[in-house]
Length: 156
Image (tube, one colour):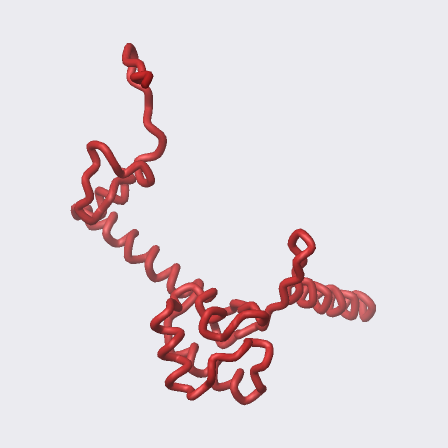
């Protein structure tokens, strides 16, 4: 039993190392685990303002705002000190990010569908919700066009 616990710890350490350094087609990607409730990694070979945008819920303006509030210069993510990394984690924990944000949005959409409002019906039918035209466009939401029997495509 004691040996199994040690092996499980060893396997989790190996999994952590594999997750932090991935190799895709010969390109080595190192990541820094931000943690702090977000549970995401940011690439360490990019500038901090760009690396923060890899977190779901952080765009250009929020990444810039975070760096300004923390007075951190826009350097490579791998050059962060421990104190800067800690303050970055604390700042990111103030926002709803990552899987929490995805769950919140999904819960809001489910609420719209359950009360059967107009936007809820559009989500159920897989159509655009924000007033876009659907007679000729909206292929992303509607899917591939279904051929109508007897009609052929015009050859140009």
